[in-house]
Every structure is written in C-alpha cells, then in structure tokens.
Length: 249
Ligand code: ADP
Ligand code: MG
Image (tube, rainbow, N blue to C red; front, side, top):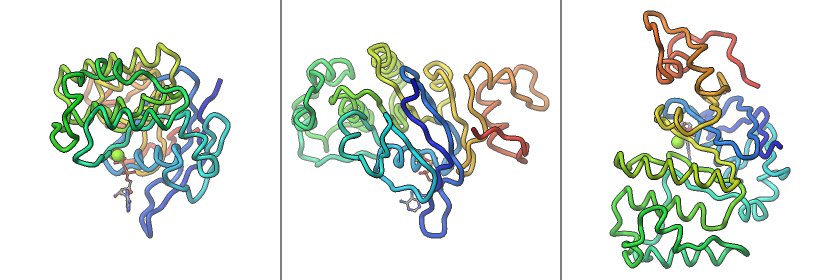
C-alpha cells in the first residue's frame, strides 16, 4: 500500500527555486530516506508533505489526503520532527510531552518514550537547559507521542554523539517494526545505508535517483574508485556534470 505519493512537486521562495521537480512514493512500513547536499530542497519537500508549506505546483497525497487541504486531519496521523524545532525555554521535558500527548486521541505512553530516547532522568529539566543532543531526542519523542502512522524525521541524528546515534537508529527500527512508516531526511550515508529501505537522491531541487542503498552502490560509476561506497555513489549523483538521464519517477 502506498501511503505517500508526491508528483512533480515545485516550491520557490521569492525568486529562489527550492524544489524544482520532486516525485516519489513511499510504501507502508518502509523507512524511506531523502538524501542530497545542503540546500537541495529536502526540508522544503518534507515541509510540503506535512502541510507546513504550500507547494507552488505538483500533487501530494499522504494517506490519501492533500496536506495543503487536510493538514489538521493529517497532523493526527503524521508525526513530525523538524530540523530546527524550538520549544519555550522554560517548558520542562515532561510538560512538553504531556502537552503534546493531549493533542491526540490515542497518544503513546510518554514515560515509555522518554526511556526509549534516553531522557528519563531529564524529565524535570527545562528545554532551555538541554544540550543540543537532548533537544534532538526530545523532538523525536514528540514526533512519536501521537502514535502516528507516519513519522517524518528531518536530520534525525545531527548533533548526537555516536552512541546516541546508534540508540536512535534502534529506536527508529523499533518504531517501524510497530508498523509506522518512516520518512527520514539525512546527509549521513552510514545512517542511510543502515536504516533506509530505499533512498531518493535529490540534487538542486530534483530527484536524480530512487533505489535501495545496495542498488545505488551497485550502479555507481565513480571514475578511479574500484569499490564505491554509498557516499561515493551519492556524491557522483549530486556533484559534477549531470548525467542527463537521471531517473525522476
Ligand atoms: P535542504 O533541507 O536540502 O538543505 P532546504 O529545503 O532547506 O534544503 O532549502 C532549499 C533552498 O531553499 C535553499 O537554497 C535554501 O536557502 C532555500 N530556503 C529554504 N527555506 C527558505 C526560506 N524560508 N526562505 C527563503 N529561502 C529558503
Ligand atoms: Mg534541511
């Protein structure tokens, strides 16, 4: 079952084209990654997916609904972790989770979530006193507190230390194993390789490839590199001259 369908998405900010032509679809139960250089339009694309921005063109269906029209309904079913989420500095960790759970008819148990993201001992700490990594983990917990069918996570592990990154990957796998579809924006290739079933590679607002990490590596043609890694493969797709035959389905 397809849960997300994006076709010919376009979005500009003033004269600046952020998303030129983005199309992809996500199947239920997948961990779907979006990778590409800074400024290639990843965040803008997922903001359109979640109804936070209105596209200039193209169509989006999330669980059959248009996020630009049915944002309120989708917010109940789609958990979002944004790249730069901010909360009031004086809000305590447990208060934030309690507040967010009150928005949902069937929230997850936030005490369990706190354990899972490793913030249990910070439950009484105010947001303004959390480290960058702790804020990040709180924002992941907040994205999951509504027991969403889809979780959209932008730069999930940026700012986390290596152990926290691994813990977070395991958390995301557990979430998926419970049946949640995950859309993950990342520019860490180890994360993309270990976590994602399929990847959309974006370059300057366009999708240049969609495939499994293994197939992207197998199909990579990187001059002078005998056994390319996923990073080599993605770099080859997103830098240098364009191949001119980039897939953008
Ligand atoms: P990514 O997440 O891949 O780094 P973004 O979607 O954040 O890319 O940005 C795509 C392009 O749009 C960039 O050139 C960025 O500078 C521009 N952009 C993003 N957000 C805004 C905004 N709110 N106003 C103006 N330009 C923006
Ligand atoms: Mg971004």
